[in-house]
Length: 158
Image 1 (cartoon, rainbow, N blue to C red):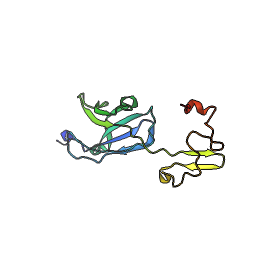
Image 2 (image 1 turned 90 degrees about the vertical axis):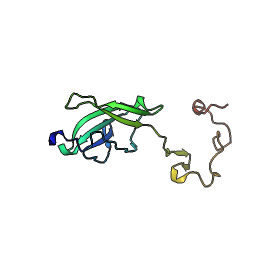
Image 3 (image 1 turned 60 degrees about the vertical axis):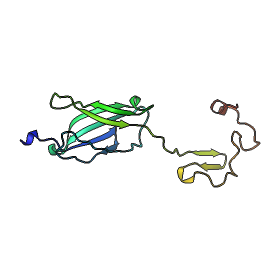
Image 4 (image 1 turned 30 degrees about the vertical axis):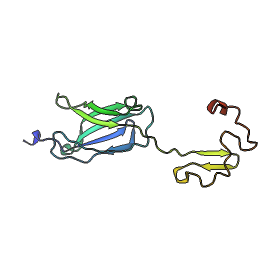
């Protein structure tokens, strides 16, 4: 009967507590074992975030039929490629969600302000066209002396 039909399933993923990070797959109709092959980037990710995956059924008003979480500690260093047990299922059966998660470095926008010299290192302005206004590496730009003070802790003079 209709109640025995496989769900018209789709999956959502978000950073737990950050609903603006929400992404979702397409609906795969009438498949007992759907494979979405969905890839998404979650730009608001922080090192202590947890991924929340939810499987939904379109036939049941998009209700969540199971969920799984993946703590960032499981994928920060080496990535994660494996199965997560689905929780919250109506039936007492083992179901899993296979996921791959990895952290990719992305360009970082930085602005360095040294007196009146502002250098923009955003991707649109990199590499700089001219470095004539930039001081040599490891100097303060005024007397070409090595940086001193608190910067020594960050950039030790070797």
